[in-house]
Image (cartoon, rainbow, N blue to C red; front, side, top):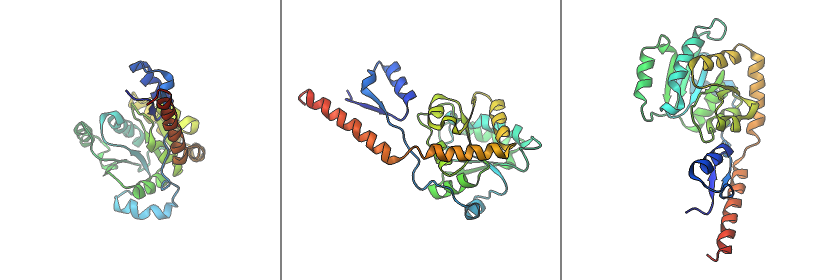
Amino acid sequence: AATRIITPTECVRREVCERFGVRVEKVHAVPEAARAVFRPLPFAETAETRRRLAIDGDFLLAVGTIEPRKNFRALIRAFETVAAHAMAGRNLRLVIAGGKGWLSDPLFAEVENSPVKDRIIFTGYLDDEDLRALYSSCRLFIYPSLDEGFGLPVLEAMQCGAPVVCSGIPALVETAGDAALHINPDGPDSIARGIIEVLSSEAARLRLSEAGLKRAARFSWERTARMTLDVYMDALKKLERNGR
């Protein structure tokens, strides 16, 4: 019944057309953007947030509602491998920031049985200022999601200067481009390899950080608003042509 449909990525646009038989010209991809609050914060200014959340030393950061789609169970297993790595795993923590979602109990049960459970921190839901502090102070941001429409936390992390390792699924490849290291999210081994690859090379970390800042700068909510307005105007013109 809709005159026009908006999706956040071209890959979701294609899915809508293929799965529901919608005409291509009816569907428009309008990318999202990270909010202005997400920008690099000097490391010293992140200390209060890290102290309050009991995060000491180096840490990996993952952000998202705790649900199966975010693939945190595979991430836990991958972290066990990373933590045992002589070069990359030195006293490293894994911080998962996000509220509980559906079917989250199996994840917490898995953590209880993990040999590195004392190095895994669940912060619960965080506001933007706390997230900004963690994005700005993590060793890298890891996003192993199995399915996404856009992947906004990836842009938030990039806009704060965090090196990003994320799934090579279509939406995240489209959002992150070559400014992230893309990994296969289907197994812990590939996730662990990606994390270790970046942690083992300061040059790789810096390259991804710089590339991420440039990539995030290509997105803005002003651009999103203008593109959305264009779709509304197109819909109005169609209604006028049809005498409605």
